Each structure stands twice: as structure tokens, then as C-alpha cells.
Amino acid sequence: MRVLMLTELYPPFIGGSEEYVRNLARGLVERGHQVSVVTISADGTMSDEHDRGVVVHRVRSSTQRLSALMPSGRPYLPPAPDPDLVAALRRIVADEQPDVIHAHNWAVASFAPLKRADGPRLVMTLHDYSLVCAKRSLLYHGRDCSGPGFSKCLHCAAANYGTARGEMITLGTWLSSPLVVRAVDEFIPVSTAVATRSGLATSGAAFEVVPNFVPDDVVRTAATVDPGLDALPHGGYWLYVGALSRHKGISTLLDAYSGIRSAPPLVVIGRTTGERVPQLPAGVTLISDLAHDAVMAAWQRATLGIIPSHFPDPCPTVALEAMACGVPVVGSRIGGLADLVVDGETGVLVEAGDAAALRAGLCRILGNEQERQRMARAAARRAPQFMASAVIPRIEAVYQRVIG
Image 1 (cartoon, helix red, strand yellow):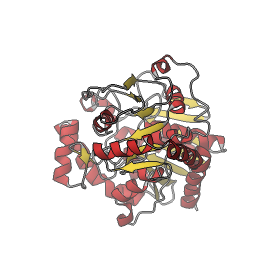
Image 2 (tube, rainbow, N blue to C red):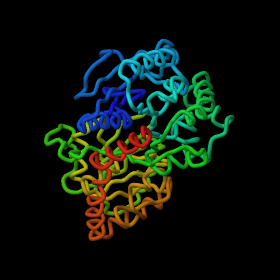
Image 3 (cartoon, one colour):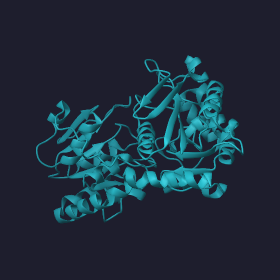
Image 4 (cartoon, helix red, strand yellow):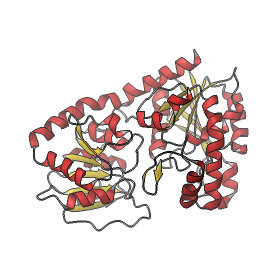
């Protein structure tokens, strides 16, 4: 099968969707498919390259020519057709004759004008809420959004991006989404929350929920030596991995932790986001910018993972990495986490943004080591269904279905 991935960014850019696309592309190549990727170019990258059998086409977009619209040098595509990308896609599709175009988020808008009934089928993974939210997060004033509304979205996006960009992105989202829904042959939302809150069921669109995944060897990639690991406490500890931001719940976590007597050490591994990091209570170790293989080593030493998101996190891969290492999770009952963590079996789910509820969930684990060990074993048993060997065949089945 010939598959063309269409994505805004691809490594060396770092992010969850970038890693997903690369792991999926490489996995499909290993399974005998011909795979190429079309993505935005970046300074210092070649226009065309090979990545373990994957052909990567890097295209300079029209948006990149308007430097005033580029946020801090990180390329992005608006939710509207990009003329340069449309032209490049027309040429690449004619040359490679793919059977399936697999688009990821707003990059889909640049293929929609080229979609033909006798052309390649179009599949789209929804990694977030970009079909209905200009910020992609359904986060409104730091909390879970009750739902989109044009005026509401306009003001929210303007506060996030600046007035000009916010208005452009909001207008593009509202105008392009109905066209995308008609053009896509089947959606792949990464969680039930993404499917529901993107309106797929009410739109009549074909979709199948297929979660994020981690490589089968993700545990074996853990670093044996890394300077960052020297800061880890000796013995067991609780672990948070993620951005140091309000929407990820870092303030709620620190508030909850500070009220627990005799708690194990808490390790926070994350990247700064420009927000002020709250004062760290006693017992907390902060490690910034740790390489992924070192993060996996940190998971192997942890006794509990904590994911206290305030927003409906679509499908947090960090939960999959924790389970792969046999680590139970205490997290927010919101977004895709409810698909991953079985409450009372592989972890504990609590109300999002509620420090008292999070503290109670943590104390439940702290006060019952036998239950923690039971949950750890259950997490390890559940982890394989979120690994590449289980998930990629489900995506192949979607391809076969839309082609057939």
C-alpha cells in the first residue's frame, strides 16, 4: 500500500503528534508499505530526506513567507488551504500516486481542495480538538470549555494568539471544518472525548477511535546513564511528566502534595512554558528538559504516576509510558485519560482541578501498598494494547476499509 502522511511538523520538531507520525510512518514501512511524509520545512533541514525508509518532503509554506504570523520561529499551518502547500501536494500526489492520504490536524485543509472521487482516499487522525477549537485544546480561561461559539472563540483565540492571528485562525476553523468533514473518508480520533467533543457522531462522519501508541520496545529504550538521572531520589518516588503549566495541573498537584504527611518524594520532569512556576514544597525535585530515554528510565524507578490535567487532554502518551513500566496512575477524570486508566484497576481517577480530590486519590495509594502493587500489575497487563504492534494494524484496517 502507498501511504502519504500529511502533517504540519515532523522531527526534529518535538511534540506528541510529531512523534506519533514518525512512529506510525516507520511502523508502516516495517510492515511492508511505501510511506512518504509531506511537512513544513525548517531552517537547517533538507527539502527531501529519508528517515529509516520513510521519504520526507519538506515544503516551504505560504504562511512561512509572512514572518509576522509565525509564532517564535516555530512553523505552523492555519486551518485553511496554504497555496504553496496545495501546489506541492498536487505535484507529489501526481508523482507518487498514493492509495491513501493520512492527514494530521490543520494540514488537511491543504489537501481538501485536491480531493477527487477517483483520487486517493483521505483519512484524518484527530490528535486534539482542532476541528472545533481555534486553540485546539478546548481550554477557556484556563478551564475546560463548555463548547464553541463564534464570538466566544474569537475573543479567546485573540487573547491566545494576538488579535490578527486569532481572528484569522478562528475564521479559518469555522469556515474550513464543514469542508473537511465532507472531504475526509474516515476520521481517527485518538479518544472517545475527542470524537464526542469534535461533533463526529452528530455530523454523520465515519470514524473509529484508535488511541495513541508507544513503540513495542519503549521500555528497552530507557537510558542506563544520563546526567539528569543523578537528581532522582534514591528509593521509590511519585512522578509527574509534562509541561509546567496551569492547564496541565501543576499548581493543583503541588497544592495536593503539600498537604500529605509522610508522602514519598515527588519528581517533576517538565519543560517551562513561560508561565510562572509555583513555589515547590518540601520533597519536590524539579528536572527540566530530560531526554525521552532518560524519562523512560525515571518511569522505571517510580512507584506512581500523576496526571492532574485541567483540560480534556486528548490522549496523554505519558499515561501509556507509565503503564508500559508497570506504574499505576492517579489522574483527572477528563479527556482521553478515561479511555486509558481503568479507575480502581490500573489507577485512580479524580475530579479535574480539585486539589482535595487529588490529595484523597494519592492518599488512597499511599495508605495501601498492596493495592498499589495490584494496580501496577494490572497496568502492565493493559499496556500492550496501546503498543505499536496492536494499534498500527487497526490503522491499516481503516486504510483497507476506505480503499475498499
